[in-house]
Length: 374
Image 1 (cartoon, helix red, strand yellow):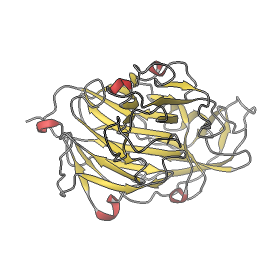
Image 2: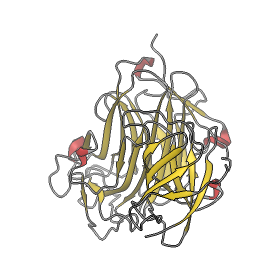
Image 3: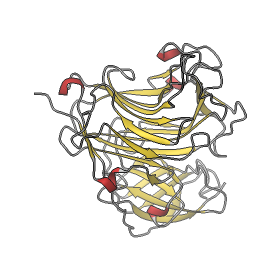
């Protein structure tokens, strides 16, 4: 019998490691900690595997400065609604500013007119991948928001809106929702709940604890929020899904001890094609007010990473900015500084996250503090 993919939620607190110096590697302010400047840190770091982009770089680091979404991504929807509604990069529209001052473009698309996945039923970008054996990992982070003028009264003109607003999807095949998938979703315009859910048996439904979704209360959709996902796809009972928003482990499961074990439809794995998506289906498609926006979208297939936070205590951090690593060694990491929400003169803290993520072991280690430049 083919193996089952399993997921399990983890809880816990990180530890603080020994501090070391940050060495400026040029760029920006001639060695200052400026946005996009090249930086080097030295120390003792966990090994990071090469998952297809070299040892260090993420599979995708999308600052939305490009000209075509499909330069980095395997596909994006809508791509059949026509300009200006198709998924693309642009400067500010609809009086919606960027997520922060260090970017000048975002990725955006509109759920209009609807009818098909690629004409507005879904607004999303996805990346295809091959998983030949398990365990496999997914790390994703992104800023996101819905347009403040989003209409919640209709979906396709057919009735009341339940707020179905999907945020992430993991699917078999080479496009989202085909043929088996699970996803995170929200209740846009109805409440601020977020849920994990599975409609077609891609995970056990209900799981082995009798649950078919996990409900979470999160922040408003109509302002910029920052999400991080840590996922371990496993054919044993050791997989896990951790979801953070604005630095908070945004899940009830650490307190309640639930696990979410999963498999593909019928309990078997067929083929090695999978994909990860940011965004997804929107129940309230139709009106031309249904815009969705993203900034700083990161996808990687390992959980090792370097984060810049606003606290020397990791659990107290409310800003977590992914740093664009270009080379990762066990004694030296080279990266481009990404300042995100940070302001000039603010103190930031560099944390090294290991193979099992924020709440795993070893826990994130504090490397050093920096003074934010321009």
